[in-house]
Length: 145
Image 1 (cartoon, rainbow, N blue to C red):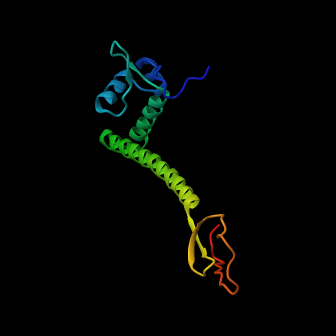
Image 2: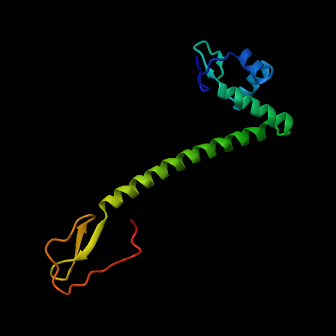
Image 3: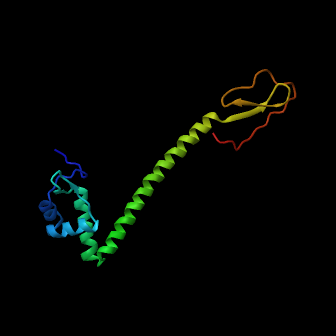
């Protein structure tokens, strides 16, 4: 059976053991907003695998790197902003690709009409009628396909 990392299934004592911390430390981190576990109907805390990974990161930054809790909060907030911006960037790139392909489908091509005038035709279509003898046809070797 596979449990999702976002499923809040661990009570505070189990989460504290998994993170290598005291349960009171988890309560303090919750008050400071470093880790916000889900709550049960009786207001008990339930931690997810993602929360435990964040607790381990907090512990590493605090103990190994010497970063204080305010600095850790700032690091986590900035990482959340980076993640949100990356997600938004992916959405915008998808939208641009979608619009580009739609624009290419709707793009018009210009050709010489039968009277020598310039006419607009849909991509993949040929102008109606035969060109006059001696009509000039423009060729662009740099045309994108």
